[in-house]
Length: 113
Image (cartoon, rainbow, N blue to C red):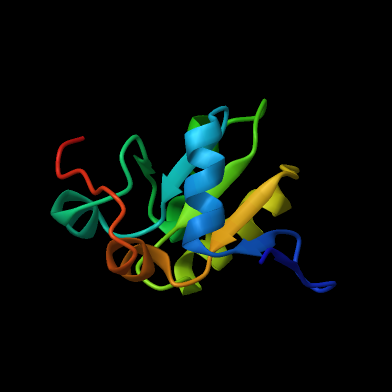
């Protein structure tokens, strides 16, 4: 159940909505956690950019498709989405529950980059 709050420039989605969007294709997934967390397991195909490095590494962000940000539980991904909005990106999503909810739902995790 996607939630667009008036004070946030992104839409909050749950892991099931994220999985549907990823399966449909044409989205970029950004893992907003620390590198060691990413190596321990992440959404397949995700690009690791720490939330505080979102603006510094903005050249890695897609400008031609929606971006889904995911972290451990949903806090850092929301911050990363705010940063992405600050540089002018618009189709932004943050996964509530993050990788913890992704794993709990039984969705696949990669340990390779």
